[in-house]
Picture 1 (cartoon, helix red, strand yellow):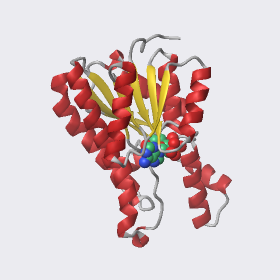
Picture 2 (picture 1 turned 30 degrees about the vertical axis):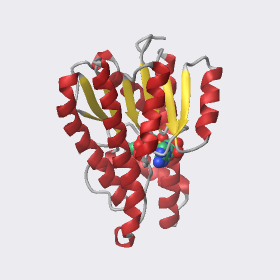
Picture 3 (picture 1 turned 135 degrees about the horizontal axis):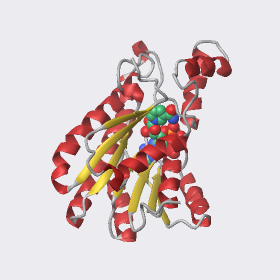
Picture 4 (picture 1 turned 120 degrees about the vertical axis):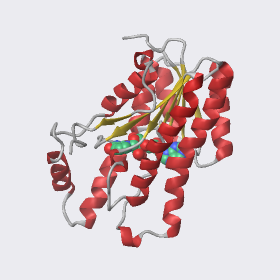
Length: 260
Ligand SMILES: NC(=O)c1ccc[n+]([C@@H]2O[C@H](COP(=O)([O-])OP(=O)(O)OC[C@H]3O[C@@H](n4cnc5c(N)ncnc54)[C@H](O)[C@@H]3O)[C@@H](O)[C@H]2O)c1
């Protein structure tokens, strides 16, 4: 196992399960001290599991749509590890529903968690990184849904498009401090969130889950859904010194689904 992250500290939001949990696990396997945070109390179970694997881990129950909780989460990571080298903004809420049914209030949780949560975690962490003078790497998890129209996921897709744009603005501002900001844009990764979306679509179109998954799979040039570890590997690359000259970039991890 490589030791790329020995002596480094990483903060990963939305890491009780799914992609965030896998990213945290792989960072810890390569030597990072990790602060895992999630709105779900299950984060404590995940931390226990990670401790039993010998990882250097702390956990925070954090709602990233609340600025005071973001501050508490970042401060906890800094007081445990003395610094944050890597922030992975992964926490997000999905949204699914016909465009003409979307209500004013439907937008609020999606924008508050996916966009404002990511931005203020970035801002507060960047302050700490600037103070430390050691630079850092921030990876915002966006989505392929944020590129081009997605009629069934309008608030979610719009929030992820905004995350990509915010990534580029932050990269320009923070480059002077050697803080790199990039984004990973996953396609169809096999997680709970993904299966729940597929179930919703199946229900609305009166088809069974297997048929929906089959149709989706056929659209992917590599002809399979992605594994969480395949996103995590790309995140680790962007967090590591292997990507020292890369900032403001958005990488699709999607089995070729983005190919026009
Ligand atoms: N799975 C996919 O196919 C896919 C595709 C594109 C993008 N993504 C993105 O990847 C990331 C992870 O997706 P996933 O499939 O692992 O989802 P998931 O639903 O399995 O995990 C998301 C985690 O975020 C947490 N979370 C939700 N709201 C929160 C809040 N307010 N504060 C803190 N934590 C909160 C949840 O509790 C959950 O543990 C998300 O940003 C998602 O939009 C996933």
